Length: 444
Image: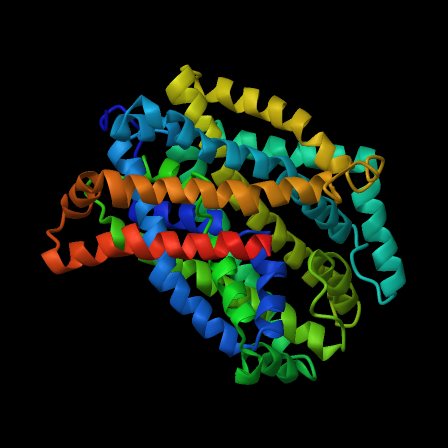
C-alpha cells in the first residue's frame, strides 16, 4: 500500500503544508484580541505550553493514524480498526466539508478586499464608511457567491496537481511568502508612533487578568489553532514516508503554528493601538479597523495589498488542507481520479456554500437556534464535530490500538519504555480530559 501512495518529497514540504493548515484567518484576527484581552503574555505563555504539551500529542495521534492506515480518514480507520469504525472516521471527513462551506465565504471576502486594495480602494479614515463597505461586501449575494466560487476554484486548481506538484509545491511558495509579508507589515507597524503601547498590550503580563475563563480560552484556542479534529493531519500523515520521524514533525508543526500566531499579533496590534482603534473587533479588525490604519501611513495602499495578500495566503493554505480530506476519501473509497474528485468537490462546495454566503444578506432572517446559517454551521463544526472527531482519534491511538501507535513511533527510531508509557498516558488519559474540557466550555 505504501509504495502505491504518494509521499511528501521532503520533510520541509510536509511541515510547511501541515503548518499552512493551522495558520488560517483565525490566527490573524482571533489570536491578537484573545492575547490582549486575557492578560497579554499571561495568556501567551499558557497557550505556548498547551500547544507543546497537548497540541503535539494530538497532532502526533492524527499523523500516526494516517501513516499506519496509508489512506484517507475513513480508509485509515477501516484498515487499522475494521469496518465498524468507518462511521467514526467519516466524522472527520464531514467536519472538513462542513467547515469549507462557510470558510470559503471568508476566503471570498479576502479575495474581494485584495482586489479592492490593488485598485487602491482598501484604505479610508472614515470608520463608518468602512463598516458600511464591509456590510455591503458580506450582504451582496452576487459579489459573495462570485468571489466565494473564485476562491474555491483556486483551491481545486491547486489540488488537481496532486501532493507533490500541487500541495507541496504551493506550500513551499506560499508559506515563506506569508512569513515575508508578515515581517514587512510588522516592521512597518513597529515604526509608527505609539506602537510600543501595542507591544505592551500584547506582551505585558497582567496576572490579575488570569482567570479560569482565560485559561479555558487558551485551551480552546490551542485546539482551534492546530486544526485537530478535522482529518487534515490524518490525511497528510498518510503521505509521510516511514523514514520520517513523526514526533519531530509534530513538534515542528506546533512550533511554527504558535510562531505564526505571535507574528499575527505583532502584525495587527501595534498599528491598531497606535491609532487608538479597537483591537477587539474580531473579523471587523481585518476588514474595518486595518483599512483605517492604512489610511494613516505613507504608502498605505501598498501595505494594504501586502496585508490582504497575507490574508488570502492564510485562507488558501488552510482551505487546501481542508479540501484534501474529502478529496482523499473520494479517491480511496470511491475510486475517483484526482481530477474527477477535485471537480466533484468543487461543484458540491459551490452549491453547499451558497447558504453561508447569503446568510448575512438575503437569508439573514433564516436562523437556527438564534444563529444565522454561517454562525450555526461554524458552531456545529467547532463545538460538536471537531471535539467528537478528536475523541475518536484518541480512542483509536491510545485506548484500543496502541500497538499501531507503538509501531509507528518506533519504526525508524527506537523509543525508551519510559517515553512510550508517557505517550500512552497522554493519549489515553490527559488528551481526552483536555478535549472534554474544551468541548464542555464551548457549551457554557
